[in-house]
Amino acid sequence: MKKSSLTILGCHSSIPTKKFHPTAQILEMKGYSFLIDCGEGTQVQLRKAKIKFNRIIHIFISHLHGDHFFGLIGLLSTFHLLGREKSITIYAPKGLKEIINVHFKWSYTRLKYSIDHIELSSHKFEKIMENEKIEIFSIPLKHRIYANGFLFREKPSSRKLNMEEIKKIPDIKIMDYQNLKLGKEFKTNDGRIIPNQKLTFDPPKILSYAFCSDTSFYLPIIEHIKYVDLLYHESTFLKIEEERAINTGHSTANQAAYIAKKAEVKKLLLGHYSNRFPNIKEFEKEAKEIFFNVEASEPLKTYYL
Image (cartoon, rainbow, N blue to C red; front, side, top):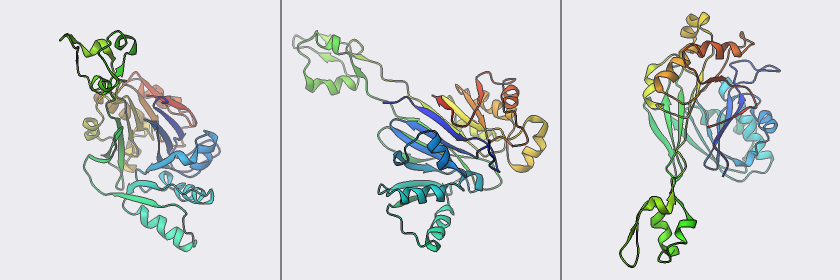
């Protein structure tokens, strides 16, 4: 299985340009490809990143400002034109379902696949998806309109069999493997107890990723993202524009760094840059005054958890 990774498709705010693309990213985790936000031009960026469209079955939209979902209807239309039959689930604020349905109604389009809409309206930290491998939570954000971040967290894996050691004990049969994977000790026919740690390896570390955009500087986020391996936090402005950040419901780079430091995350990725700051390394420099492990995210770059 591939390593868990995040591919940035777009990381700028508002107006797309030749160089700047609005928010969209692909999280690869436990064999799934999650699309997070879908700004204008996302499907072009997906092609550039060589990400297969048919692997996307879950889409998460943070809020209903255009730079976070204007690319979605185009992507859904492309799925249809490519003959997609596999259903898709969209987790988004209430209202997006209506927007999508109106478009396809008046374009007289009957999709070849179904869309399952999970409409979000809660202002609480809640689990919105779960299966045997992963669990996903909504994170309440503070913005001009209703907005959520998302926490993606792997579930613990089974222990890995140490076949070299297992072969040394003839009493162990294939039927015993599952108990060993669950961490149980093994008792031989003559009564000896073999410690599980001698027969198995520790499972892979549980990884987690948190996406927090768009949001003002909002301390309640911290309790929900404690110790995550990778945090993407918006940094629309530099601290010289802090008043503008407050007025528009956004954060500065140093505020994002403060959140990362207090949450004790492993690494911080900055993004959602205002186009008035063409040199994104300025954001990174400002954030590093507070939090050491920080990077300014770049389009079409992949980051590993």
